[in-house]
Length: 631
Ligand code: WT7
Image 1 (tube, rainbow, N blue to C red):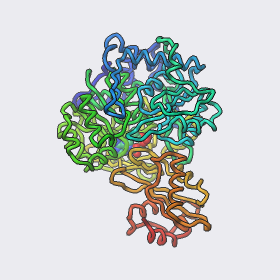
Image 2 (image 1 turned 180 degrees about the horizontal axis):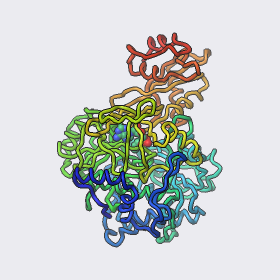
Image 3 (image 1 turned 90 degrees about the vertical axis):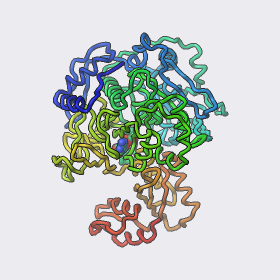
Image 4 (image 1 turned 30 degrees about the horizontal axis):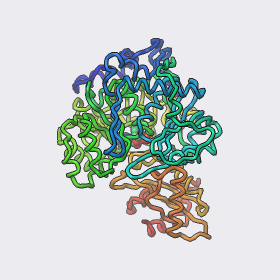
């Protein structure tokens, strides 16, 4: 399904101005290319003081008819998904649109047979196997709301997410393969389910064949689908009905369940997919993210499939069996567009260049990055060694909350500038604010990023907590969407994202709130209090530095450090483990009791010559102690 393509810088400039002045007619002209069961009554209704955003109200659709059914006539035999297994010696799968349609319909009938109805929440805790995509689309088929939880999360994190959305069903696997590691997902799920009263059934896909404990509410996936029908009518959804919930961490301990809805999300993800990557019929596109994150939702599953593309899913990791795996996959499947994270690029760039050069990468046309700012060195390496100097690089800035890419160049169409995400997408209106919240009107500027008007895939609320949605995103600057990032703007209007301006740290492209990590550390019996900040790291972009106060009766030991780290792994997952833990006698606090993270951040990055104003501190003496013992 081909949407109108922007194909020159001029086109972009024209369409951009038009889209901001006439958002309704612009987005209606894009939405018309999709399959609707009923046309919308109004394109956009919004009030960001409330806040409320509604796109295509009155419209009825099912996103899976756009991702599957509509392609059957013209490209039923085209490959929809190439699935690459963890072990390169195992066979890759090539699943056609016809076959994907059949598998999704079948599994949708299984969900129905367990009484899952429109609006019910289904938690999906699965590794990157084909059935993960089948599960996601099967939910959407019957109007159930999927909540995918990244399979690297701990049992506690899983339980918290299941309970927050009162999920009815859990979909998981016996285990998962990632590199030479096997993770017992079913055991982790069992542990979580001790605390999840709303789960009625667990459907388990057999991936590893390892031993699992079996309970009365467990069902094997292969048995459940045995007698299920291959045909399942798509549920009729309102444009603003919930499509999915996806959790992201925030500045309090509780994860935020971002709610995305059907119509606007579909239109925006397909439009940005086609235009940013300049995908053309017949191309093979690969996004190396996990479907447990928004990147996978929007740019492995929904954007590519609603466009009728061929999308690659990879089960494994970039380091297995060696650090050339990504390039091996690009060669093997003749990948045309490749989308990954700066942290992966930095990790791979540390290894012999032969691991890249021995692969034929001549099919690559577009490279992409996402998740954090890309530093110049990584950009150059990616451009030179992977792109051979002739693939445009799209540096895409967006968030779980935005649903789709908001700032990026369009591959080979609009000008790129290294380390800059560059220009806003059609329909997106970024501005920069000063510390007082006033708009900075000069062309060249640095400030806090905000967005002025709605785009179709903005998250509509935080599940079960609209007040928090308002507080986090719409209160700092009245009437504007506040993403939490700072940015620079050059004289040509290009944006460069400089990083978070709140208590979120991006570690290896994962968005981690420091508060939940502190909470996890504080749960340790030896810990009085802690503060976690980010510091620059070669490979991960940022890593975590924890300052910890111990009760007097505990001695700082290597063993204690390890048990504190374990606490974080258990509560959140290994990605949140601090690289450095320093024991301190107290933390620098303001008179109102707020930890001065600004100072701790500077100490963690060794910028101790200018700590700024410390006069408002309650306990200025502690600063020197922390500096003296810094790691
Ligand atoms: C935060 C959102 C969007 C999918 C992956 C992360 C940072 C994201 C970029 C980029 C600089 C970036 C921002 C943002 N970020 N992309 N191209 N350049 N920073 O989604 O977990 O919701 O995290 O990631 O700080 O706010 P997320």
